[in-house]
Amino acid sequence: MKEFKYKTSFSSIVKPLVSEEKDKYLAIASLVDIGDFIPDIDTESNVDLLPIAFNAFVANRVNKNGDVIDTETALDIYQNFINKPINIEHNRSRVIGTILTAGFSEFGTDKPLTEDQVKDIKRPFNVTLGGVVWKVVNTELAELIESSSDPEDENYNKISASWELGFSEYKLAVLIGNNKNLEDAQIIEDSDIIEELSENLQGLGGSGALEDGRKVYRQVFNNVIPLGIGLTETPAAEVEGICTPRSKTPEIKKIVKSSENNISQTPNNNVKNNTSKAMKITKLEDITEESVKVLEASAVSDFIQEQLKTASEQFSTEKKRFDTELTKANEKHEVLEKEHAEVRESLDRVQTVLHTLEAEKAAKESEEQFTQRMSLMDEEFVLEDEERELIAADIKDMGDEDFSSYQDKLNVLMKTKRREVVEAMEEQKKAEEEAVAAQESQEAVEVSAKDVVEEAIENSELEAEIPNAMEAAEPTIFEKYKSAFDLDQFELK
Image (tube, rainbow, N blue to C red; front, side, top):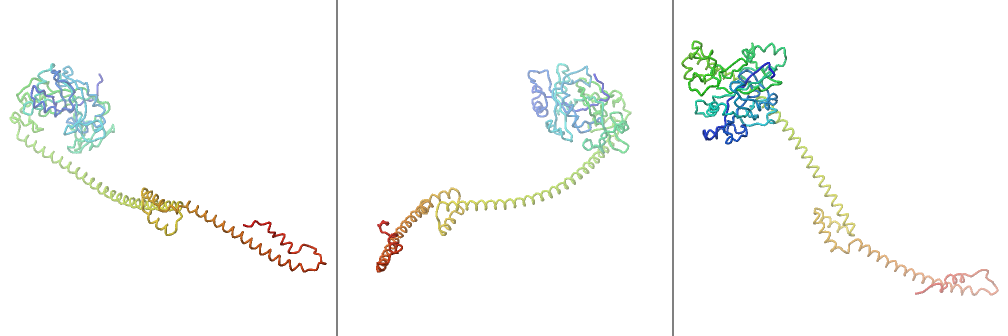
């Protein structure tokens, strides 16, 4: 098996799926708490299996060991938890179960999240696992896990899960005060600086702080491998949550009730074995009926002062960040309001122009339609100016259906005005006029011819008095007219 240069662990409370046989109300509560993460197992048929679920670690937030994993690494490794063993106190020879499911949940609420929902976020979220404990391997441990889910039981939240991870590379994350969120950290990737500051890392035996008071943490990345989960009683006092490659904790024993055995410490730092050494309080749970017997008053006072100082620093940091974010939000809001007003004004102008264009287009289309209809009327009917004006007033605002009906009405009322009827009548009138003109012309010709003949006759009588001795050298005028207007050449009606 590959040996990793570094190892670290992340701890969380185990939540079991309690059976109705043990407690029907706890069974309902456990379904609510971990129902979305437990493996799909028929526990009625497999009574020897105890489904459990827990948050393996919080991504983007520093853990108690001073280590942190970002979103990218969490997405890379979370599926690798599946099929890894569950053992007692990281003792790989004492495997009691296995991991079967892996997913994500919201930090603080445990609300299930999908991979798509977490892939781009920088805020903290949980990597949540589900698995089974084999009851037949360790019945007493299985019972202890179940009882640890009952708030009224003395073993409530007593069992925690500690995941061990192996890795060979890390970056440095530098934060101010008690801030633990990776999104606010200064990330150092320069190998020379990392080597220089690594002695300050808590995981390597340092204080976890730099000379200027800033906190330095280890961001593990690149080929991070889950090595297995160890179940342990919730550690007490100084050793809670502190787990380095060198730290060891006693194995889980039977359910014990004495406060002495509830404290998970090595014999060398057991409070009762070293009453001369002042116990340091790190959390309220450290103040118990047993620990009060050996606590110095100053320890309680120091703890309260430290908590007040921590709370004050945290409040100051959070308030400063809140004020900064509020200022940025106000500035962004003002910019957005200005942009919105400009966009609104621009949109109003565009809408005004659009309405004008639409009105012009409608007017033009109406005008073209009116012109087409009047042209159609002129093509179908022969109209006087007054008739055209009346028709124009009628059809000006007509729809297509009304105009069609109007055409049908005109075809009946003005059928004598239809162009083909008028043109036919004009042709007939013209033909009649031409016939009359022809007749009058014929009559005029006949009258003219008669007058010419009579005049010629009169003239011929005068020419007859010419002496017989004179010979005409050429035809007389009478002869010419007589020949030209011989009545035989005309057909008189």
